[in-house]
Image (tube, rainbow, N blue to C red; front, top):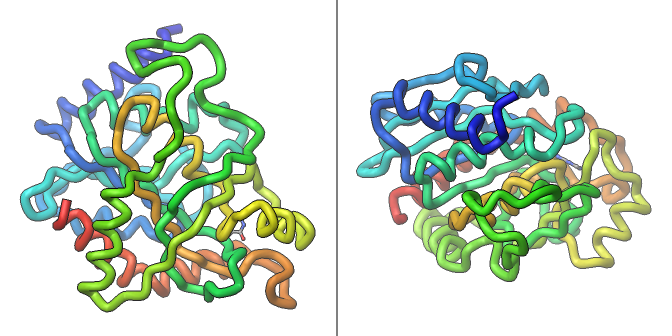
Length: 273
Ligand code: HPA
């Protein structure tokens, strides 16, 4: 079997061949937020299964394609559908797409997700800039022999989510008169939602939102020196906050309800990069 680095390289070469150009910005679209891919001009759409070594996600609500197109002066890659560790993929597989984006020369990676609101000041449908994360997935995608071609053995994580990009998100939201929250994202393995006791624990350790993605991709992006922006759509209040059970279809319904605002925010941010 080809070494991991060579698989990433082969996938990057295939993307470059199909798209003709390389993106500067990449956006990973969370559950229910895939529509953003349809807003790019002159799009080249690549189903994941058409790209070598590309893992497929089978979560409902994840379409599974890479679209490269134009947004204003920027070449943008939109990743509709991502792999999650809870599907049984190892973390090298989960972060494969992030590696390919880095290898293509993407400098700015925008990671979006659906998340549960732990901070009781948030409401369903709120949008949150991720200021920092707590990786509680039980794994780290950099475990194992370090490939120096990707990055250093012990990468710094003191500013995973670039201050500059968070400020751009704030400016954009202000210009659009869109309320935008800030907070710490706790990443758990899933796929079961949390218990109320787990949510109280997460609140106590400083988390504002909880989800099952993003943190491991952000770690890999920083390993490769990309600048990262994280945006969460608070699709539901976390377990135990409201006296009702959590349901994936409600998560999806909220994401769909706010996708217009979310896409507008993304477009505005990319316009200001
Ligand atoms: N918990 C974990 N992941 C999630 C949630 C949640 O409440 N909502 C959307 N993704």
